[in-house]
Length: 99
Image (cartoon, rainbow, N blue to C red):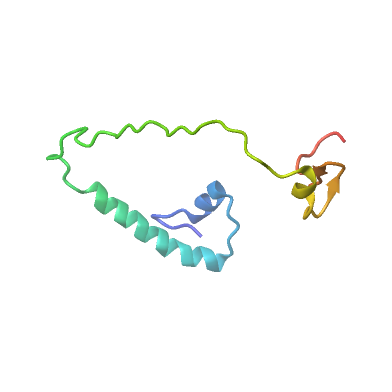
């Protein structure tokens, strides 16, 4: 399905979306509305707005004291783990390669 304004197949590829044909048909008009709104914004006359008239506000990052605080013990952290190995969480392998 190809559309003049929205190339839904290309969008699905870029976003790694696996949509049904019905979902694609439903999504295209929604995306077209968004594109039209962006076009309206692009047509605004901004010539009277002075460049950098709204400078970024530079707030320093708040600092907190680096203090030692109580934390969970290994036993407490692993108490609800579905699988554990010694003192570690066991999780499914997600990287393919040598064993």
